[in-house]
Amino acid sequence: MAVSATGEVTAARQGRGRRIILWRHGQTSWNVERRFQGTTDVELSETGVAQARRAARLLASLKPDAIVSSDLERAANTAAELAALTGLEVSRAEGLRETYAGVWQGLTHEEIIARYGDEYAAWKRGEPVRRGGGELESEVADRAAPIVLGHADKLPDDGTLVVVSHGGTIRTTIGRLLGLEARHWESLGGLSNCCWSVLGEGARGWRLLEHNAGTLPEPVLGDDD
Figure 1 (cartoon, one colour):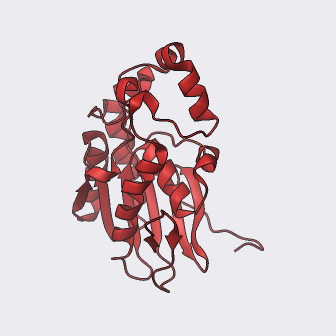
Figure 2 (figure 1 turned 180 degrees about the vertical axis):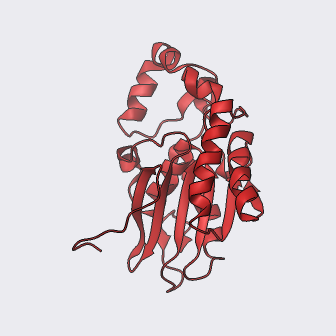
């Protein structure tokens, strides 16, 4: 798959069977405090490390072929737990960082609503908003989706890529890879810490197979198999 200059996802080859696992980092103290992290480099908490180790044991059983991670420590240290079990090297990419949100960063959810309520409401309505003077969601997808697709293109036809990133970046990347309009990306629910979503390559492009999963997938049994 490839992303065109206009941001549209187009078929680049006829391979089938590849999977992309988009894995959110473990918990941080700012997550617990409901502080907007963005590009602030906050480390994993003890709980976050334990979450990463548990999830890594599950994901290692899927025998991934490659791991790429945001270069922020909370994501890179999550990825390191999977690397330790699989022997794979982790490629770090700045383009997989969380959304830069300017003056929102470091503020709690309540503080953002109190100070920037109109801006927050517009964002939730799906309007293009530079939260805190930062990035548009479409700009996050512009930088993250090509990195994911570039690594996916290096996989064997039945290969699996694990992408370790952040909730907002993962959501916008999934939206872009599925070809959804940006105003509909909010319809994809958030990811819990150390949970993941799975995209599979089908006849008409990438499909969302799982979302916000924390256990190994069960086969789809039914007419939509």
